[in-house]
Image 1 (spheres, rainbow, N blue to C red):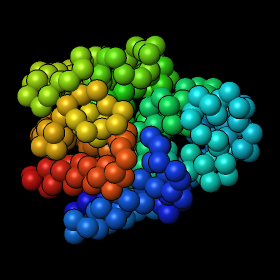
Image 2: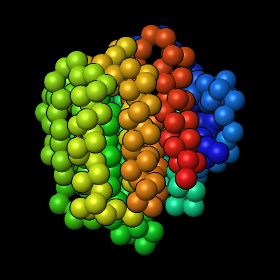
Image 3: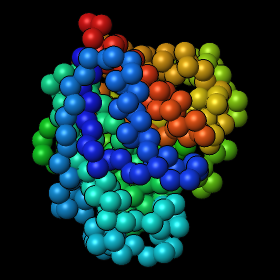
Image 4: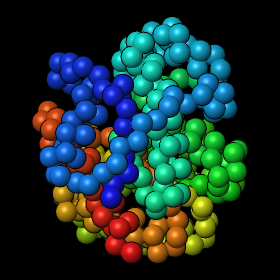
Length: 300
């Protein structure tokens, strides 16, 4: 059973072709239905403002919620923050937090949005408004649901915002495995960064993951994993520089879930990046990722 968090207000109307897939969140749900997967859909509430302000600058939070984000920040985000955008920006971290709570009950749950790992304290960036990963991790710890949170970021882009927002915290570990020459040009410092050269394929990627993740899980012993499961390491991704196949992405996701499951660690996944002109193809990659995680979680 796939437990998936989704809200109709995740979905924006389709716009002219571009790297930002405004309709991706709706297409992902269609792709899940297309596969006939057994799933329960959970609807998130907006993340309350105090939890946003616990991670982000209150002035920036106010700018987003009142749709008064300065033009230079909107350029950095990559789109104008409208009333719909502001609502989704508040729903998305609510969805990641809810997915984490559901994962604690079921082993795995997926937010069908989120993974906004470029958002910084006082601005968004790279199509990210609020950093749902950092916000959810902070709230889980502050409310006593977890003592230690590991954020495993396997998006093709470095999780610079997540690294910056959680820097210096002994209770949050950030792992980012990404294409070194990809965005952002100026990298932050995660707990562990592994920058890959262009063109890395399945075998090398999976070998590196196998060498790295089990050791980190054993050493840090998190109470929960927040997994940024971007599908942009795919060889056909428009903004990626790696060369994973469909089978490679599935093996990646199953390995991460298996390592969590055998240690009894719940895992909440977020959608992350995925870009291309064929929007349904991208949505199917995201759906396949969620299905692989749920399937591996069920194989107990």
